[in-house]
Image (cartoon, rainbow, N blue to C red; front, side, top):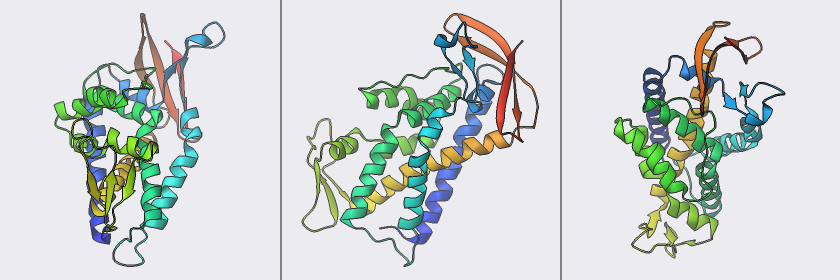
Length: 267
């Protein structure tokens, strides 16, 4: 359960946290206008060599594929937390749906790749043209390459990852290793072992905060990313350095507001 004013405060808090991370990332890019490569969803496709340029812009196919999941999340948040009463009301049905959404949010390679790129900028690393998210050991990957980078630079987004990204919760839902306590107020995790998995129970209220922070983080990131694109000056040309493996060339990228598309050329 969460009160209406508590959710408002949480939304504002997450927005400030995401804005802080984006601003820090922009200021710490390694090469001038690396941030434009990020916004233009630039990728490198070695298989295109000889047919098209392997340096590709506006590779938004994954976002289009994920569109229904984003729409579902927004619809759920709107309907579930519409506060027709002062407080939200928990039920086993809604909690089960939220566990599913939570798992999808944190298992998404697309989402994790976005945060990896953001963390790289914060750490002044070059733009990663092809982020590889491992099939296994995602927790270690996220901890070492995303969470701890945010911590290193004292960014508050670290706290959301620390408090909300949990292999145990995802494992519990994926393998049906949880149940509702007999008193009806807690989630009980059957994969608790006191060594690797340290959470034995979560109150419904504590779960709600974890879920909402996770959902708001993903939604706010999506909104911030798109607003950063729309704030670009129409038609302005940005000189960029494009590096992948041993290749390094210079190019120019611009954004057309009317078509909402990036275009580029090799210098």
